[in-house]
Length: 69
Image (cartoon, rainbow, N blue to C red; front, side, top):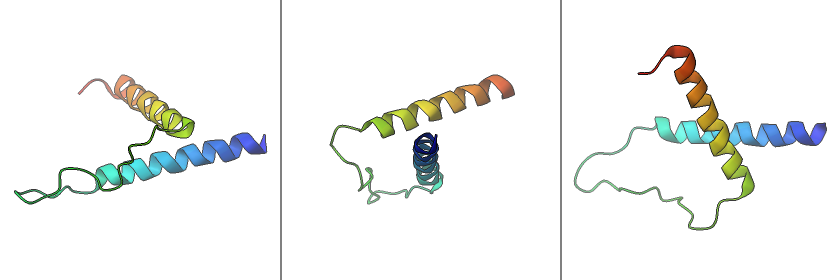
């Protein structure tokens, strides 16, 4: 049970980091960078994939409970 809690905590941490990235204002203008500098070209690991699924499920649940916007 302890291992499951650790795994869930890691997923929650990854989701929080992703939401913090999305909330940062992006630079605008001709010389603003268009890509993130921390983009890795490696194959995503299992934890990344699971975090994306959890995020998608939470967004779908939010749309269902609050109505479509």
